[in-house]
Length: 344
Image (cartoon, one colour):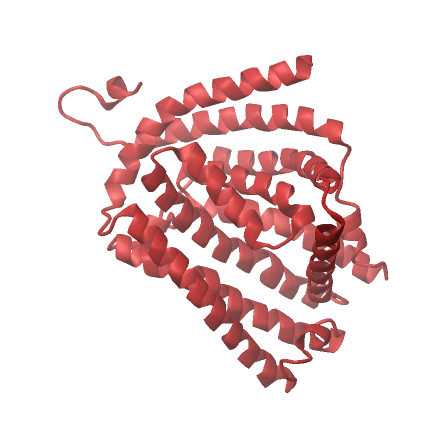
């Protein structure tokens, strides 16, 4: 009970400090986001392009698959699990994810601003303290994510829904395991590129650089926008037993971008999370152990989540403070009342 009170106090303090940072964040958003359309229209365009990209990306991905394997669409699900076609499956994923996530984000950013990559957060830098804290926070999140994975398993489902979820989960894990077949260091590097780096770049560009910014402008409530973005981020991965862990990771990534406005930090954090999983899969592969063990070994006891939350909140308060100081130092001198005096 005392642990829960500590967590509650830390979260309350975190929210109160948020008001001060929100005013500064709005100042910076105004500096480079000269929107040509309303947030609601931008959201509709982004989601419309996402749906179109999902369809076009699937077709383009299959075209790559057919060119490399000469296999048809009717045996695609089974052939993707064949180690002979692993590279074709990886190439198909590169093309489909690029068209589904990256292209819509850049297109909407171009509509919203004359400097689309600046609007997305590509041109905002960071300092070494922020980078180190991102690594430390991601490490502190691992027990929390594992505990949430265990909690996700305990959520009751009806028998029919549980069977459907189990089948969907098995398909998802089978595809991930097929992509994770690595028998050499070269295949490991290529897997890092396909399964860690590219998803980090494309997904962060779409979810944090695009969707989250639009929702913040629409809702006028950053924390709500980050939560909604995180829910969508987790749902898109179509993995029920990984929903809560990805939701938590999405929220952490959302805070990284909200406080730093640097998409590079988000990409680094996302890449680190994916790279650790790929590295463990590579270790299992070269030791002739089933890659499925990487999924089974990812859970933690539920009680571990409480100290993990406390650690993450405390670390984020430090990250928020450092990001705030860095942002203040970039504001040019102003005539009249100082900008700091307007902060609430």
